[in-house]
Image (cartoon, rainbow, N blue to C red; front, side, top):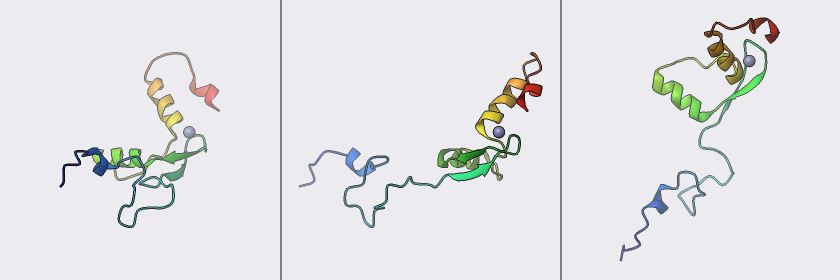
Length: 89
Ligand SMILES: [Zn+2]
């Protein structure tokens, strides 16, 4: 009877849900990404659901204030190299 033998069919993590209970009809991700404005460069970036989960997991209560680019740049700053901060502007 239940020898369908396809446990993956139930997971349906990314693939489209086929006939779920009140399944989302719109092609929307599970979580909505938040649109944030970088405090450093003023660029708009998306705080993705995955990042939100990551942050929540880390116990961060605040959203990131900097775009991934600036966050990466800040990382680079730890390396004592030439003055790249000046060229940022
Ligand atoms: Zn930025």
